[in-house]
Image (cartoon, rainbow, N blue to C red; front, side, top):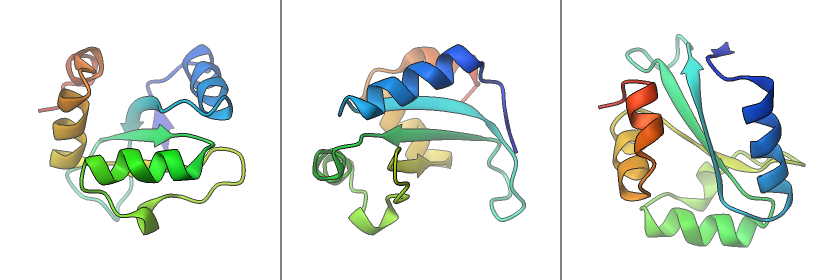
Length: 100
């Protein structure tokens, strides 16, 4: 279940992904399969090859891409999420969602 993101943020993320840009969307999220993780960052790009190159830069495997027809994306959790958001300079999301 996702929460903590508004419709405008989601719409902007979808627009950037659709335009072939690397786009980030962080929100609160609860899933029993991932205990201790209460946020997720979706990093998407319609250009899957570009997304793969971006992921490789951060040590992510291409087979970890969620192959959504319209919005292919990586789901980042935990330490990987914090490390990548910091490396990409997305400090507002780190602070907003208290990601350490």
